[in-house]
Length: 253
Length: 288
Image 1 (cartoon, each protein chain N blue to C red):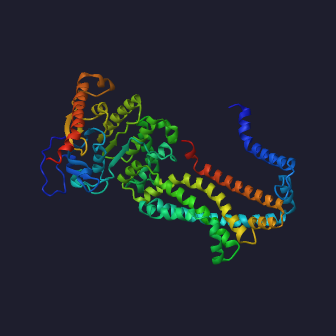
Image 2: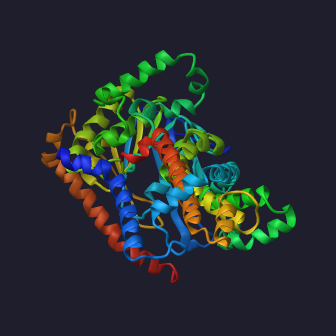
Image 3: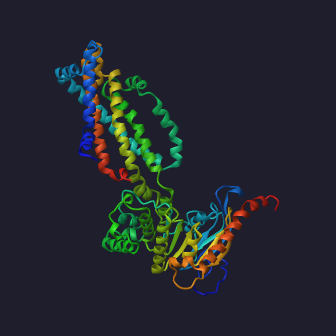
């Protein structure tokens, strides 16, 4: 690979991102779109600067509910994934229900959660949990179910118990699936928490955007969107790095 | 191969003396009906130290035979004896290797082949204390198959032949008395395969192993085995046995000698016959 091509590959994410903002800015200004419909990104950034205090307060709230929901999803997802992944019977028994739960739009659950828990932090955490739980379960279960049958025979002949096979082969084998699911799950968790905040909360980026749009402060809405996107990218990057660090072997074969 | 007198055992819990593996009138069905019989009326005797190859048309229950002997599957009818005892449950003095090497991608070669030591007693409880001795043992084994320089490589860094060598090492690391191989070289190219025949022959000579090799490669069977058994098509049973009485140590050159070629030819004839008989045999069942 030539050095030019290498540099291009390295900086391509930055180039594309900057290009997108430049294009957006150009379209918004040249077409003279009113800023209460589509503000140019510079105005969104200005609004972000102006409301830096409230934005960071609400962003922290969103980050908190997202990570709390995501954390629960990881713990329970791992648990349920290992349980149904290591038993054919349970896998068969629970799979339809899991698909059913996953198919329900989470925004439809928020009113229920409000009845049960009131508005605010708790429904946001639960929505984030519900939306990010499924990919973790399915991936862990898949990882466990893809043990090669020959290897299982080799180990069973040696007298390996189900638990030994699970510990020595099943769980390491499912780790790449697990870490791959974390990247997906954490971004979904943001979707969940923001949805809930938009519908039923008085804190968080979702709430901030809701109230900003009620006051036609569209630049602030966009500032909120950019902040969510940035947090999503950051979290994704953290888990992608973690994935590479822990299961690098899975990327080389 | 001791010339000991065989005598039937009236109690049914022990096999005949002098036999290491004895399969006696075994049926194995995967389902309830007769259609699902994988093997029927299977009889096979193996002496300690013997190298036995089982050949037959595809789907004839060769792999089922391995599962029966290793105790992975109990027979529906009849009994299997190994080392004088009736098999019920798995036998940890067996080593197994399949066509698919199934090495763990997150472990290097050395740690891959040491996996059985983490499972089989008494090694399992000694492994930590006598780590140095076990490492030495594993490295020696890698050396005998020419993998010593690759001990810290991961499976994706090895060629197909090397992975299969490692697979053999993993099957042998706990010093099994019986080695069961299910088409171990089936996926390799012709040259690598012949190379590995020699590796296996050397290993067997060095360790005085009893080996059961399931294969569809007749040259492989004749080159490696003392006795070759031909299995019928499903439901499988042994229809022919052929002792390979080639003089001297076999080398790859042996494969081109008339005596060798004659045996391969003869076996080929038997396989052709069971392949043609197969469908008729099944058609005969209702009228019989």
